[in-house]
Length: 132
Image (cartoon, rainbow, N blue to C red; front, side, top):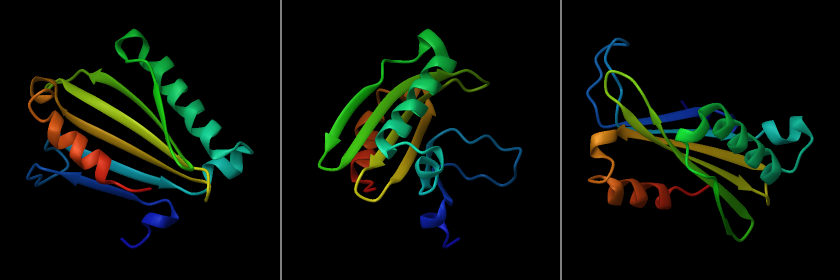
């Protein structure tokens, strides 16, 4: 709590999770990394792109191509991929690199694959409302 800007993690979910054994299927994880790029010696945009490429390489052909957009000093990289399990999931991974302050934000949105199309408007509204 209270440490998000120092590299903490925020998790938002729509499930009622009572214990660590309950499955978490729909929601997002937000990680703010203010140190990684600096420690790597790379500009934050290059660092984020490298992480996106690494993720895509690990996932393989099931992942979409990485798309890149730019909003002023913020570069955004995005890919999607399936995550097998008892409840197959579809994950949208967004890496935002703020070149003005060197902070990278990683957003992972996941939902059951069968719900992907139905809740796409909700996903896009939430992802577009998150500011780095």
